[in-house]
Image (cartoon, rainbow, N blue to C red; front, top):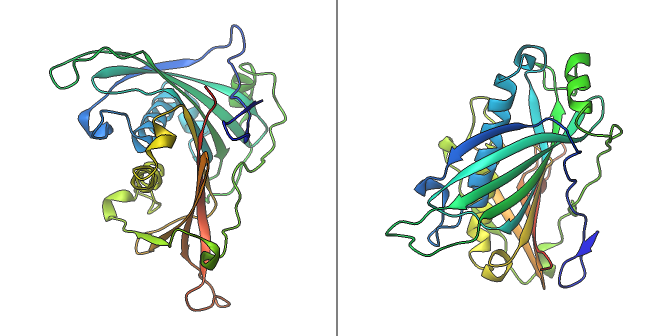
Length: 280
């Protein structure tokens, strides 16, 4: 366990077990993946993770036996930023699992190139990630991983009793107690997937709008953690509630409460996000 500069405890992501198998794929960094400083954005990292997950399962026979998975949490440790131009190499393996869910580790590395727009030499990029994936059935309910897939995944790790433990505070503070006023984030129809759920990358597009005002967090090694609590569907408005601490930004993504007992104007938390500066 390590600490952020202000003493926030940060547990490092697990290393790959010696000799464990892994899936590898390459993805070209495009200009649509980077910000004005050529840095690969958090939402682009989420798209790489979705792509390598899809490519991984398509390279196996488990697309038929275990086709449906949802992400409960994603951890992104930006150790050395990746920028354009470059090719990202993604290595994906299982870091821990139980019978219905798994922590899938993805290591993103990149040897940077130069061009007329980004001519300076840069260190090789390194982003470590971990996602808590839940296996679900066609009704969206948690389901047991099939025996064959469980055997394959469990061979990659000695951690076979994975339990859920939240990494972000899930209770939003009272807006009257905060320095930063709530902010609406406008969604577009292109932010939603074919199942009418907000795409995982679209959540992090909202966070990129926020870290623009906190460059000290992303100019250094940092960890972003997003935990998904409720689905966001088309037509729903998002309110962002923010708290800035010395070395951490906390964000609650809130949507109108639904149901017969909901009060007018009541908001509930759909996702929580933290962006924390890591120790050098």
